[in-house]
Image (spheres, rainbow, N blue to C red):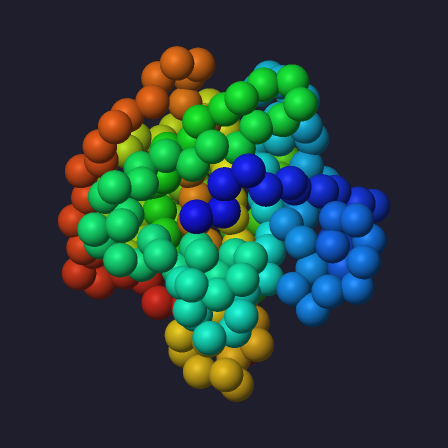
Length: 193
């Protein structure tokens, strides 16, 4: 998995698209946070911390960078990996996965500054799209981590499709070892164009 990787941030969302965190040219770019995200200790984080990364555009879970996110499409892998660790310089944090889904960019899952009702609505929309139904409660006061990469699940002609994993920030020291999930029978399908 993508452990111990650096996440960078710039003044916009294009600066690191095709360069590494050391500013060297690279087709896969690097992991970068949405330019509107706030960082620091947990109380300073944005309501939705959004991190982007390229995949190999084959949806290959063994590919480079965020291609590894596609491992979460496997039910057994998802069950064994209920938590994502994402930390800032100020605090080590654990996040509990509650949705993994395919979507289009027309679905606004990347807003970072959300009020309580908007947070709850975003989480609910994610759960409706999720490949699995996680037994994870979310609410208006939760903070979210959103990992996003490109996908070709619905064909190479759909340039606006994404694969997304969403997780909620856990209280300090509260890290579940297992998760209860089931395959969702009719997840909401992406709308393209």
